[in-house]
Length: 338
Image (spheres, rainbow, N blue to C red):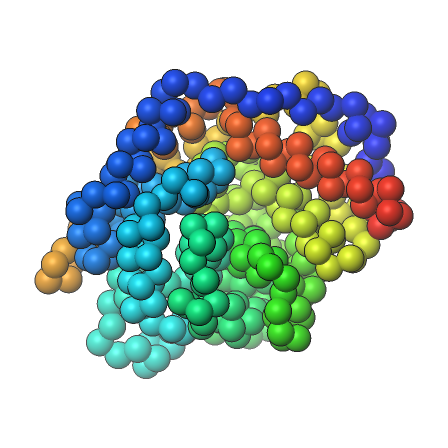
């Protein structure tokens, strides 16, 4: 399949309008992040609970292009608190005896999503969290992907990597160049993984068979992404990958997605089609780390205002516009190849 470049170039890039409700939500999140309550939440747990904790407010502000509004006391506190998590991904039960793995360990998609946020806040993430980029390299699987399910690394005879576990680390590793040779190799292999999946295919393995079912929903765009995957997010990172690494981008790997997006959003106005965060559960951190029953994840005003199905999304519109421009640059340079 080929990309219709004339149709692609003809899609306009309208200026996204921001509602008063979204502006109020931004102000509300910024105020919360500057509060003592946010500091206490970060100290208690940097990640939990979903979705109403500083981690998620910061992620959403970043996705809206508003990371500059995040108070420095919040971003600095979060970076320091993340550094107190385990600096490795415990795969075997004996890797971290006595450790609460839900609360004291990170995963690939968590680190991949927070790395760009902290960088956008002006934090020197390489200095503050020097173990994060090597983490991605260490846990890259044979096919170039990663998986936040620890048991995936215990499988033999197949490679059950995950799109969700791969896309955010690749985004993070593309910030400021790939760095050392092993990190450049990570980027090359992760990009190759995304190409082989053509942005739309779930894992063909037995262990990660669930992803094949999840892949049906990827074509419906979601916002906010947080750590979730959809085809526009995958397309955007592949275009960045091709431009940053000067690689050729095979049309066959992206044409299905590109042509579908052109047909669906011919006026450039991209709307939210899915709430990937809806209906999720969370643990509730406690001071004494006592067991926490599962609770329905709570929302906050900015999350509610930006995730309504059918509403235009300024962030998705901007990402689609940037991806189109990147594709046209690659085509002009002869690096969008059949």
